[in-house]
Image (cartoon, rainbow, N blue to C red; front, side, top):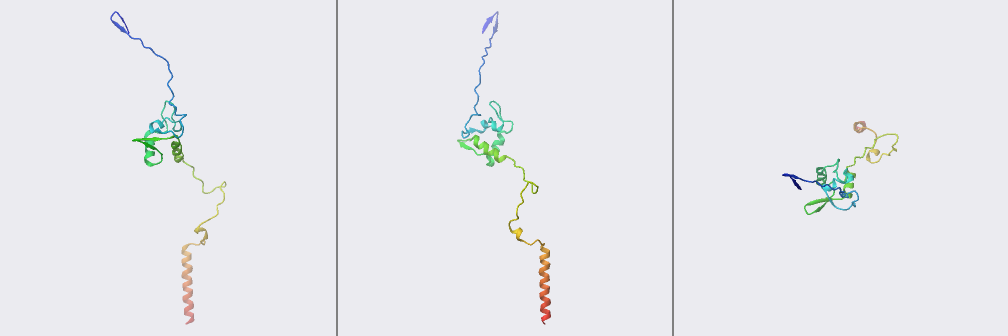
Length: 144
């Protein structure tokens, strides 16, 4: 600071320096990290100095409360790992449904109780048994 005829002058000194990288990209998969720090992981769309654009802290906490995301409890704080995040992402992955029929699917043999049943409706079975009962009654009447 210098003074010149009643005015104070300030000089701003700016020095260039590199900020150290947080280092989440090279973090071992079993090192516990806080849920807040997990948002900087590249697996969740984060980066060195930016939070995830895919996942919020509330989504991570909800996954923990549902039991979908594994955590370690360190005192009152929850910690997760890159391995737990990868397992959670696999659980969240949507697998497309297989079509019930199509030319690219192998033929499946019928198994279970349904394949052993005759291909008749229950009303036909009832009619047959009623017809059998009527025949038995007719035969009994003929004998008399």
